[in-house]
Length: 379
Image: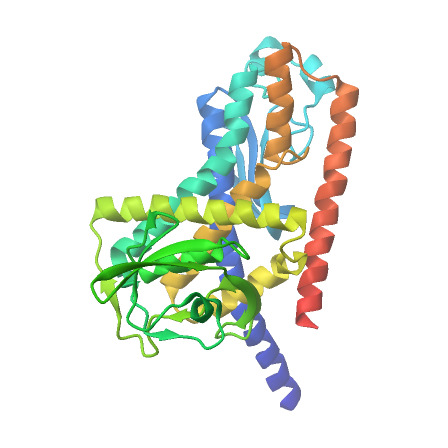
């Protein structure tokens, strides 16, 4: 009985991680590949297979256009294989292309013009950004958004804000000339500028006071026990949440909110990558599937809206990752197509083959590094 109970507990515990993880990843992968598929079809390219996941097929069907839609065993990505592709990474199969008749060549991916190939490849990451906009907008429209006035309730002792001269009751009006409407605007502005002086204008007793504050990076722990490093200045809006409220948005306002949120996440992700490259951010914040599963499980306890917002965040990250100019990724293909468009001819097969091998090695190294970070975090 104890053994059976232990197995049941292990099974249910695994489901707590697996189900939210698969929910989030399947949404992101499906829409990414759907972008490739739809634009490819519009460009007259025949799709042979549309797969969510890699490896052996678990279940699938053929549509009337001859495309095999399938769910595969390894749920860590997906692919659309077009006619003329050698593999799931869209490496062109020159030998197969040479042996095709005119009818097949008309629908083959490598036989299309560089513009159509580039549009088909770019459509995947673009679909990720569109998905993020729709999710952010939809959740905001249904649930509203929580906002709070940028009024200081407390200044942490010995914090950068205390040293800069902030006082309780100050209302932050602008940061480096940019208007601050909500407390979240202030948090966002500060979080993107570690160790960078910020000139802030605050209203105090009916007059405007200018203060210069330099955020310092601080390690914090969220409600789930996850540690992360973020720039802070030491201002607190409220201790009990009384200064925050739910603001209902119209459909148009929600769409605008979705666009602004997606743009913000894009900016922050690009900024993070840049800071990792120059050594200002630690690489231990880069996670892989294990961390995504862990975070998905934690966020799912908050509610569906929070889990969908996580999917939107990850969708932006995956869209940007795929745009990196690394062969094997969409950005690498676009780099090759840019060369072809400028020079009027594609790179030689030998150069492309070397590029794909280097790209595969880089992608594998990134995956190993992400897994190592995941395992180290668990330990």
